[in-house]
Image (tube, rainbow, N blue to C red):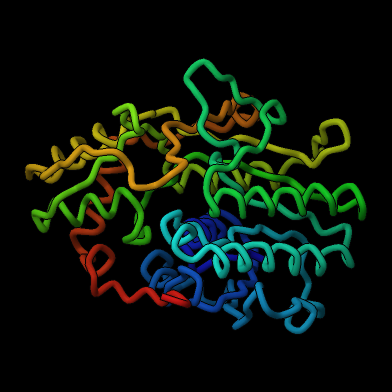
Length: 335
């Protein structure tokens, strides 16, 4: 079972499973939480239609027993989550409730089937802002989230810890750095910058109150899903001091937000109208950090440089402009 399959990263996971495995995949979807009806057909060949099933099911509302108890499932990958920070700030109650409820419903379902492993996808943002001297290996940093989105992801992790300890469930957590790639939601930084440069609109590059520009480590979403599959295929799960198994998956390329804007501008061969100013967000995180030595020791590495990812993303979206502009038909509750 793959949750969040109509979302950005989840759809790329489904694409990988179709193209590189013989799995049959069950996908609970609603298209109400950032998922998109056109994303799966945009990324995945129709020849795989007989290898996955989309099942209308809202994880945050309905018990999975309703639709999944009689299915043959041997593992679960959880990509489902609201993920837009600005929306979490403007609508924290609905946003956080959704992410917590979907996690508790998923765990409640799986505790009846303790032999089914859960791979839960989380984020580097749960640790809060870290400086360049911090070595953030698995289980070395406290979760110190700075906004309702990262707090909701931290809450999901806490629930995973509790169910692992209380019900002896097979749980692995994967924390990833900023993902980019084809068919990403237009509200995210990279597609937003692409669309604004094309339209000649102003691009805000935020700083902290001292004028420091933030940076992020970028990871191609296709590389992330390869890491997920490598973890799934591990014969021996690694548990640390009675905690769930955990892997950090980090991109090697760290760019400031200004450097990313300039990189996109260069590939588009169009100037960017940049305004550098303090972030309107309180709790603005300058930098996130993950050390990914553990997953790399298993043989995982990035196949794609950030320059190639941006080039390919621009080429892909040039043929599909509906993924960049205001007519992008995303359906979000409570907006």
